[in-house]
Image (cartoon, rainbow, N blue to C red; front, side):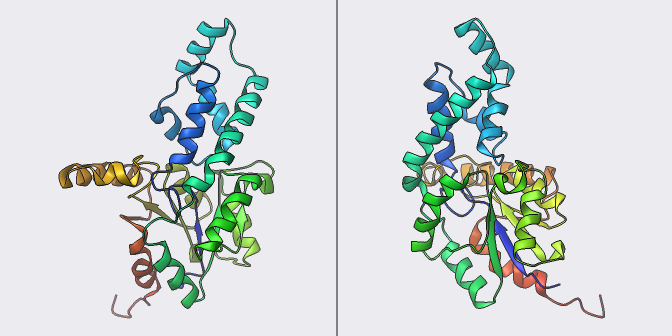
Length: 265
């Protein structure tokens, strides 16, 4: 087998160690209407498009109860729309602070370019959010050929295969088994599976790990190892094909996958 393309996620995978930007924006947008939400409540559905994610959060029983206690009514679609617009404004204002490429990406980009392996992205961001991220990423040498949002697939985002399938179509790749989908959430893995691509989960700096680089570095080696084991177990539970501690391991994995099968095997 020869890998023809790699499709990345954005926050927590290639940029924004710990996927912090969406967390901060979600919490602030809900706090602005007097509702407190935890990181765990946000992270369980990370990877969805952001509008769908707002609906998921506002449908949580704890959030519904808090909302009813505060406003004496349950939240409506109009409330979701208002929270989303506030969330988006907060996120757009902060994205430049969370656009640094994660460790190992420089080497991955160089490898993909050297070996003429196409790369692109699927994302829970919308076009306006990407319009901020793309030039900052480009200035760091990261220039995905295609960038697919759910608006391009009729509103169908992860964990469905639609965005990944469109990315493959635009790259003119017909065999999804030659495509790697790499991300940092359960929905990334499910997206890859549903498209019949190779699904890879990233451990360090991931949404599943949920820590900034400084927070992770402050842990003891034993605490770091335990957290990595927990994240690895989550990826294993949903059937990830491969699990990498960091992006630095991706070139070697591609080399391994590309190795021809021996006649003796």
